[in-house]
Length: 475
Image (cartoon, rainbow, N blue to C red; front, side):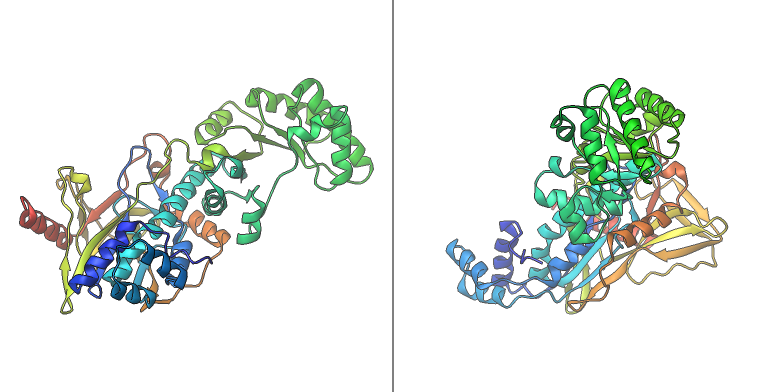
């Protein structure tokens, strides 16, 4: 991996100088990554943890980095010498990639000496915010499609890295393949793609273009049929070439529609293919698709088997930023935890203080998720006794549950600077996501008017939060 240690905001380093001067650079600190509610967020799919872990594993300042920082003229030689020796020595607790997560939950917690923990903020957020955003968008598109979604967004991504890691996140979110060959090689994920309109336009006729492509790829022939006239020439010419392929012992893959009335065209094309004896030929659709349009096409009875989704997936067009934050939750003095809180006039922006854990509660009979509970470190939940949970703001909203099981939502990713969890492939994380999605009632995950999934606080954490609000109010 590239050395990305300087992938940070300057104020992380200036604060580091200040902590160094104050003798606080080795003070243990705990920071949480979480995101706040948004009207477009029903649930999110965690991703980017692997790149965050790689960043921490490789954290070091090269001689070139130190020389550059020296050239800025704002850092002391003693501090630069400290940075030249810096490595990540802390602990990380994090959810797995592919985990279904909700607002306010600490999904990545760094516990480390202050300068290490502070320095990690920008890069960790960069990786997790972007990939969680794209994985979540992909999951919603794939849910609408019912599967068979290919990620086609590289040319519309906001830069090369966004295209590469967006493709990775899209696979975690449920896409079956990517058009991005570099991402395919880097992450060992399937790649897909056939032809563009330029191929068809470069031949004297559409039929000749189709024949030439079939000659090149007889065992993998999928033809783009909307360059000129989909129903009058595109599909009839495809059928003619498919017939020629069959005589040579090959079966065609199918056709792709990239424009026009996809519902109407796909139904007409399906009828034409079936009547010609190509019932197994698939119809792929592309062209500025997203979950809303896909769902509408399916409601109209569109005969589409696979979907190529680009711009609105790779850019998460309706919500271009997740807005995850990295907030100080606690520091340690003489081995004792000192919880920290950020106050705000906006209730939703008041942070949950202290070192915390997150548990998911499942119904014992159905194994469906009931709620998530954020607790103080060290708290345990007795599965043999009834448990009352409550809304952290509207505390009158309470529910008592019985016959449930509890799962720790996070795992130890680092301990003492040593990585504990091996890298998982995007396909492994996608399979994990699919299994966990199956443990939620559809009402929580649907696109329109979803039920609000409960993320509540334990009594002990709620009391701590209220105590700190009263302590710091007016300061």
